[in-house]
Structure formats: structure tokens, C-alpha cells
Length: 232
Image (tube, rainbow, N blue to C red; front, top):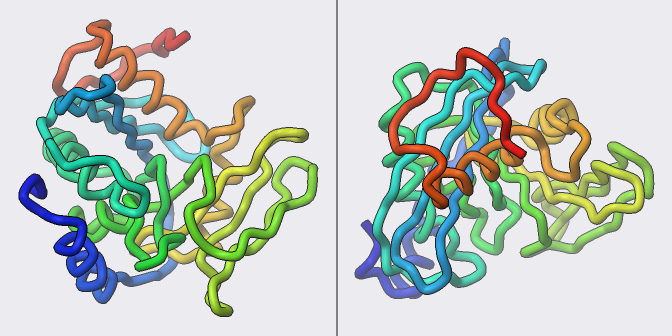
């Protein structure tokens, strides 16, 4: 999909896609998804997965897995070009779409407002939230050292996201609206997705399941979950 793109081409597309971003509150959220990618170093094969949970209970209801071949290189700020095509292939396996998708990366907390969550949200026409493990952009302010403490992340006065402390004495995560959702609702949703780990449950579960897919423990396709999976 993007294998023939240069970084200059990718930059131009990000600027154009950012013009399509919309932000609004969602009503009556009942399902939430987590999306993640896994791959072996120096391999062109991407292992992609999307898990679907009920909200706010965080029980795993279904998941979809698929592979995708890409030669687009990894570079900070251009993650969407490597990961979004694979995630869109998985997305096509899901008939009953979730209300919102959390991606392991940024939304508009990005120099061109087009992190992987925003990129996926635009192309899928889907409400998305970015929850990244490291800071990419913006004037970062460290939240207090208590669970659910937040600090705004701004650039030139614009609110781009939040640093969120999910555990005491643990590095924060970085939450930003992707598409079709507001910043305030994004941070409130992620707070309700925090369990016993630093990472919110949707992307944590996606990470575990995609790793099992990459190592051959799970097969490609759409899977309904009739009983809880043992992921550890």
C-alpha cells in the first residue's frame, strides 16, 4: 500500500489526511478494541491483531488476526505507513465493529497531527484513541506520582494529549485523541481501561494475542471467545 512511498510522499499525505480529522464525543460506548502489531526484526511480515472487549468491564469477546507484507521502513513519526495497512486487513475480518479502537501509538500527539491512531481512524472512518508508551512530540509535563494523575501535553498552546500515570512509581503513558472522539473523552476512557498493568487492557491484550499469533500459538482469522483465554 505504501511500499513505494518516500518519506517526503508520506509527509505530504499526513498533512492532507490531517485536514479530515474530526473530534466529537461518542455516545453509549459498549465495546472497545485494542490494536497491535508484532514482527520479527529484519522481516517484512507484519503480524497484526485487533481484540474486542466489552466496556467498561474489559472482558475479551473476540479477536481477529492477519499477516501483511510490507517493506516500508520504521521511522519515528511515520508508524502509520508501516502498521495501518496490516491493521486495515484485520479490520476487514470484523463484521460488528467496536465503538472505539485504542492503538499502541499516538493520535494527534504528532508533529503533523497524524500518528498511527489518527491515520487508522481516517482510513477506517472509526473513532480511535492513541496510547503510546513513549513521548514523540509536544511540551511534556510530568504527571504527579499517583494513579490517574495527568498532565497536559501542548505544542504552541494547542492541547495535543495527556501524560497519564497508570501506576505509582511507573513511567506514564501518552494518550491523545485519534479521530471522531474528543481529548477529554479519550483520557476518561483510557482511565477506565487500566487494570493491574501500566498499559491499558485493550492494547495489553492485543499485544499478548498478537505475540501468540507470531509464535504460532494462534491462527489467522476472526475468533469469538466463549471462555476467558489464558494469555500468560
